[in-house]
Length: 331
Image (cartoon, rainbow, N blue to C red; front, side):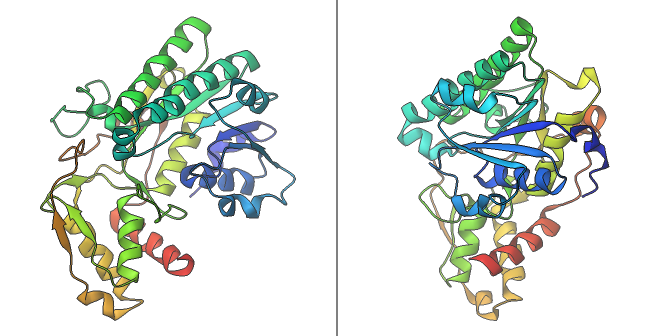
């Protein structure tokens, strides 16, 4: 990834909330590799210490172990910060259905705390992780930013509330904000363990163990799977753009192509079989659809291309090859 466009971040101090998580640690890594000062705020509820272990010896890296549900922690983390990349959240639709209160506490109250702390610290720009779940029951494809439906889960509600709060903080307090609606992000450091693991790392782990991956539904549900490097690029473009028209709005972060779950498992099996030919014979199983899941997801990325010069380099095949290689080395 060519990063000439982030020259303006030199001598700036960036806070990455959830910096020990999957997306957050990748953002930290890229920024540190460009010799940019980074503070990571994480409570390690879902983030992993091993994700940031390589950064601890870097003089540009500062770790604050804290919780966005504590306003004091947010104020401490925002002290002296120029820009915020807010990734901290409790993901997962099923988790939010099982425990809506904690999901709301983290994703809404925690988000509001971060906005207040960023405002009070005079932060120049607040870029935050939104979600494609905000499109809810709106069926039209591709998804266009200005048209959403009714949320289908507590998680989706919390991420939509984030967008509403961000907009109010711009209009009321003049805080520049950019929301990034992530579409099924995958790649290195995404955790395959736990009850709420994302589908790609979970399937990879099962294939490697010669266990049958289980698809919810008949395999025809489709997603706009988005490789981590595309997501990192989008965050950095949102952080550095000088186009005033590009601020204080939301963007889809995706590749702009749709892959069914059956196609996904076929690709995974093909790429993993290059490392272990026995994976070729692993059977795929199916079960009932999951509550809160939308059938199809496909993003229009025209707005991001036009206003932020977003130029995603990794389609599903290229991204999966990279991800499979990483998982094979690290599982």
